[in-house]
Image (cartoon, rainbow, N blue to C red; front, side, top):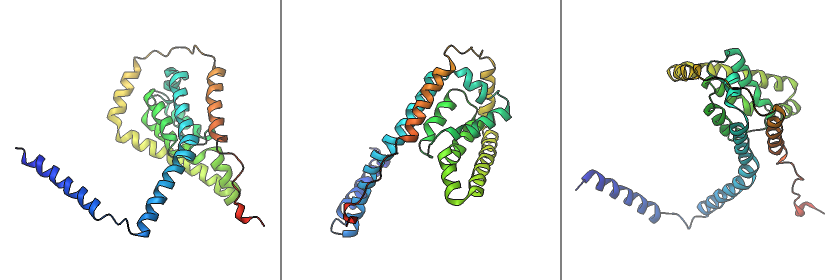
Length: 222
């Protein structure tokens, strides 16, 4: 008999039993917390996943299918010019309206296509902070100076963090760089306007998905 395995199973049985036995279902506070949790899950599924995360997944798919590996390597690759890779990575999030959750599929997509870790991290960090809607909203509410400071700060820190991550994982980056040295960049077979059309169509869906008339509480009417 494997005593360690059996004791571990017994431990988890006791823990689960204790949680079930002492569950405070008679507490109003507990029931309110449970209801609020399920309300939040329902809101996240309807408002955030469908309208934000799902379009971001489709955009990541467009990058994987329509954007050639040569284009990614040319601008983001480990062998690309550092100033070009970090500039494109730090500023390309401007055209997207994504949050810190929906930027993850896009980051994963370009990184798997061969982007260097530093430039991909710069894109991951700056994307949610410098998208055009966030900058306009910040400048409109907090003033032009705050909007400008947010843009400069996000771009600057994204480059710094990208460089630090690239240095931390320099061994993996060197392996990727050597592997990409033998990859011959193929010319683009698909016209740029077709790729841009698919990409910006999904971006517009992502931007305007949450637009709509706000709900009006009938109880406030006279």
